[in-house]
Image 1 (cartoon, rainbow, N blue to C red):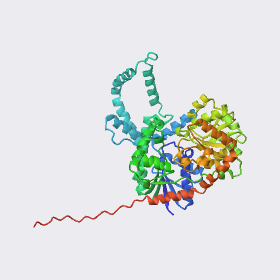
Image 2 (image 1 turned 180 degrees about the horizontal axis):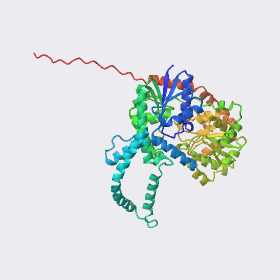
Image 3 (image 1 turned 180 degrees about the vertical axis):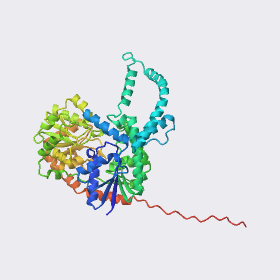
Image 4 (image 1 turned 30 degrees about the vertical axis):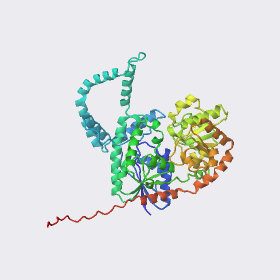
Amino acid sequence: MSHIGVFTAYQPHVILGQEGIGRLLVFIMKGMLNNGHEVTILTPSWHRREVKKLLKEHSLEKRIKIKTVRKHPPVMIMIYDMMLWWRIRKAEGNDTEIEKDEDEDPKEKLTLLGILRKSTFACLSTYSILMFLLYAVFIIAVYLILLPFLLIIAPFWLLKKWYSYEYDPDSGRGKAKRYIKEKINTYLSFVPRNLRSDAIALGIMNSARSYEITKMVKYVNKGDIDYWYVPSVFWKEALKIRKKRVIVVPDLVYAEFPQCYYSESVVPMNAKNIEYFLKKKPPVICYSNHVKERHLVQLRDISPKRITVIPHGVVDLSEHLKMGLPPKEIIEVYLRRKGRGNVPNFSFVRNYNFAEGRYIIYSSQYRFHKNIIGLLHVLEILLRREHININLVLTCSNYNELMPELEKMNLTREVIFMPHVPENVLAALNALALLHVNPTLFEGGFPFTFDEAYSVGTPSVMSDIPVTREYVDDELAKRMLFDPYDYEDFAAKVKWALEHREELLEMQKPLFEKFAQRSWDTVADEYYKAMRCSFRRKLPKRKRKPWKRSKRS
């Protein structure tokens, strides 16, 4: 059959195994392999280890080739890795995920500071240790020459900042002192906890990223792989791929909740990349009719003919429970091997009897639109007003962002965190749960959580949002769907589902059977057909006849 390439350019430290896109990649690549295609994944040098780990978790490391355009990541990223490892070793619970960034503005003015800035980023993103040392010597020399001028200017700049704040009789000049202290701490802590708001770190990653992705695109265009699958719209460089390709637009979540996501400094950068990409109006793929009609046709004026909707296949976790061990022992073995890690209340979690305990589960990362805060409020209603003895299991790895809310609501002993769980443990957790609750405010496609839970015998209740309405009929929606903004309706649906678990499971059987008819082999074949149809034939150049001057009569 054909040779298909997967083009990925995720930023450093994105753990694909914990993200939905990572699992989706695995499902589609498995389908391509089952259909007889050869698969190669092209990834940046700094992400090779993570991709290899993802393939190994799903026993695909011998069937899928990994290609990089560089043997090792930039020197600065290697230094960053070492310092980050040291910080994690010293302090538990750090959120080390790095968000996506954008390319530098090509219209940036050429100034002395701009030249120094670009030279610094070039030094930090170089791949050669010798070049790194040469750059470093040059930049240090320039900074030493400029140091006397900076020392003269600095007191005036600080004085201006000192008195630029409005006078407060209670704190006096405390605001300015606090501002100066924050700035000093920002630039002294070279390895930030999160790169969302650190301009220097974003610039370093941006410089390394843009250079390597450009090399990757050149590799694609010169290579012998004719079909390419690009799973994200973040990488505008993918527009320069001249092979047959499909590019996926999962969703534009920032368009649904701009007041929440635009407060993060990196989101406008990503949005700028996406908008640049969509202005070119290339053929794209999405997962649902809602994203097609709402996000792409209405908001971005893309022709429906250039959009292909390919829904997900079924996610069946039951195969993980056919290995011999019962669900309870799968969880116990995992907890014994895991050790303490970064899980809060680990001793309580390790001694918790999952087989006899009453708990509901939600498997997702913590983000605003996932509505986990709303789920905590509903848990509080069930515990304190309805007097239902129940726990909540969450699989988000960024749980430290939820801890202040849990302490405020006094739910630290009722919420159990199980981050970084492999698929067999996820299957066991779903199998022993009373109910799977998905409170999300938005999804680009029908959530995986329904298939995951039902395949191991657990019913689900979900948010009443457009993508669920595409598949759930009105009769089932009365029992299965709730308004995620109305905590009373939310709590009532969860309470009814707990009391009528078997009835709900039977009602959801036709829906699961409908999903079960769509395998990932079928999904992969639809992607392959979209790749073949995406090729735009170039028209031959018209041969112009030589111009001849007409003879005058």
